[in-house]
Each structure stands twice: as structure tokens, then as C-alpha cells.
Length: 273
Length: 137
Image (cartoon, rainbow over all chains, first blue to last red; front, side, top):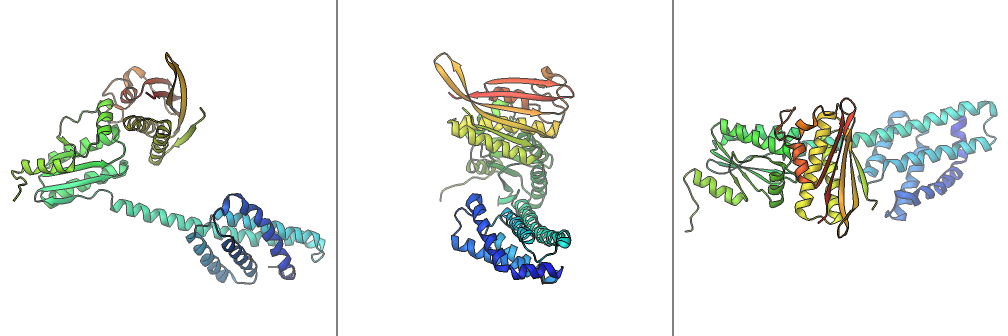
């Protein structure tokens, strides 16, 4: 970094920050900080301005760590990334205005200095964006994993009877998991009857129905039986409208009836003592 | 009425968001539970067709008004547009059990039965536009 830039920033530090803060008020009044306490906004702005200026004299590694801890904290409390990118744009604008209205920089050096400032600001913007997107990708990855874990469990409820409750949207990937877990689970738990519960599936379209039919057929091939339960009235009507033939395998309205039916099929029943 | 929303469909998540938007609009317009389910299912079919055959396209949802004998009726219009390969034989795809993807072949004829009005416009090599309406009873 050119010493002239550093010098300029340090000598005008307070003015630069004051001007910047004034301009920040304008974007605050827009969409960004609705609801955030004014004190928190002021504190964040102070910290942000101090950090920007501090990075001037830090080495790369230190600056990176400081920015990271700063952005992590803000992400956690839900500050939008655009608040900071806009903040940095403003900061640059304020600085450039100082450069051009001030005599500290000889006119021959204006262009060079201008580039220095650009590089400095771009570095910070890039890192902030990296930190934010990195964290988003990480979160997405974790959520995918979490989703997959609760995707399609097969639960043995009685000897020879297992239940697979399906909750949420069924896409191609999940349909594959349903099939795999069903077949593996049937072998593992020696199930004779499996109940697929679709109470929690919001929409049963032809693709979902197709996957269920295929799964039931595969279950039949490994020597077990599949009962579809949890068909809500509106789902029943849409299935009929779509013209999907579910006549090949038994269906029951509720899990409870399904379990009773499953017990019956394995020659057992629930009795009151 | 000016309630309108466009949903881009280029992944399986697009199907989910189109469906969600449809359900919300149907609820807003006052459709009952069963019709909400019909509308969401129809959107799901149309959006899935876009994703399967054209890879990308869009679903436009709109609250509309139409004339009937007793006055004005309200409804929900779904337009599914894509620039995909088009449909070679519309007569065939409207037959139950016709499929080119190994599915059930109930999608389009099913949508027609789920909804009140159904119109399909397709040019081979240029794309497909399907318009379908459910009236509020």
C-alpha cells in the first residue's frame, strides 16, 4: 500500500468515517435494518469502519482472520451481505471524494492512488463475499445431509411388521432412497408386511404414485406385502381424477387400520385384556 | 384481478416452489381444500413435464375473472410454458397410459380431469404452452 494513501486515510480518518456514516443512514432507511435496534446499527457501523481502516496496516493473514471473525458474527445475527457490499462501495466513494478535493495527493499520482484504493476495497469485498457464500454452501450441505438422514426410515413396529412414514416432498432422489431402504429393511427386519404412510406427503402426483407403485411391486418380489396408509380425502380424490390405478395393492385410511390389517395378515390381532 | 406470479422451473426444486405458489394463490382466492389439492397436483404435473421434457420453462399463475350466466365467476389460471422439443402428437399424449418416459402416462389427461378448462398448444421443435383454468364454485 502506498504510504500516501495510508497517510491520507489516517489524517482524515474522522472526517471520512463521519461522512461515511452519514451516507450509511440513507441505505439503512431502505430495506436493510428494519427492526434492528439503532444502537446495534451504530455499533456495527463503528466496528465496520474501524475494521476497514485497520486492514490498511495489517498483513494479509491478520486481515483475513479479522474479517472472518467479523463476518461470522454478523452472519450469525442475520445481517445481509448486501449491507456490507453497499457499505464498502460508499466507503470507496467517500475516499475518492477526499482524494480529489484534497491537495495531499499530487495530481500526477491520483490515478495510481485510485488504483490502490480500488485494490484495497476489492480485497475486502471479495473476502466478505467468500465468507458469506462459503457459509451458505456449508449450511446447505448440512441441511441436505440432515434431510437425507430423516428421509425414509423403516421402523419395525411389531414382529414382521414395519412402517415407513414419508413426510414432505418426494423427488427422484428420495424415491430412490425409499426403494433402497424398504428392500434392505425388509430383509434386515424379516418383515412380512410393510406400511407406507403418506400422511405427510403434500402432493401425490403421477410421479409420486408411480414410485410408490414401483416400490410396492419390488416389495412383492422379495416376498413381503405392502399396504399404503394415510391417504387423506383430498389426495384420494386427486388420485381418482388423475386416473391412477392403485387397485393392485391394499390401502387403508390410517396407520392404525393398516397395523390392524397387517396383524391380521400375519395371523395376529389386538385384544383387550 | 392482478394477482399473478411466475415461477421458473429448471430443477426439481422449481416444481416444489411452483406448487407452493399455486397452493398459496388458491388459498387466497378461496378454493376449498380438495380443489387446492387438485390445483397443486395439476401444477406439479405440468411443472414436472417441463422439467422432464424441456428441462426449463416457467409456470405462470394468475387469478382471473370470467363471465357466466349468473354474473362474474372467479378462477385460477395456470400457464405452463417452455421452449422444449414440443409434443409430436397431442392426440396421443391426451390418451391415458401413453408415456415416453416410462411413467404412468396419466399426467396430461389427469390434469385435464383435475381442472375445468384445458388448452394445449405445441409446435414441434419450438415449445409447448398449456393453459388450464379452475373456476371457483
